[in-house]
Image 1 (cartoon, helix red, strand yellow):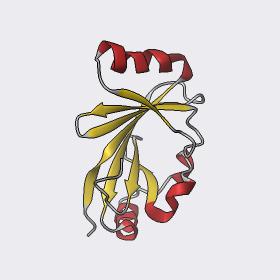
Image 2 (spheres, rainbow, N blue to C red):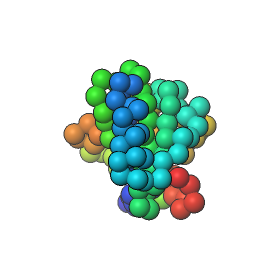
Image 3 (cartoon, rainbow, N blue to C red):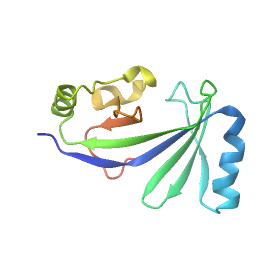
Image 4 (cartoon, helix red, strand yellow):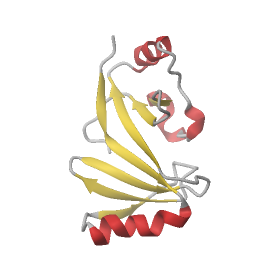
Length: 130
């Protein structure tokens, strides 16, 4: 049985019309550390900022094709093939088409929980990777 652990990343996919106000909310209203980041490896993301969110990193991703905000989470596993097989046995299959990540190769898969929330399933767990 593979081990699953929470990852250090949460992504909020935000429509273009709400993006600037959302970034300002975290930066100006809440006073959190917000920084613009490189979105070049995520083809569906037009712009991104990171927010220090305790030990987590909250990614604020502007996605021009979405119509409402979505929250995406990260899971890590010690055995990606076993994790995929375990999840498949419960009807959860990779849905890597949601956002191609070519630079991550075979270290990741996108999955959705039964409520449709997207999770990045990644291997190997790396505490220095955000």
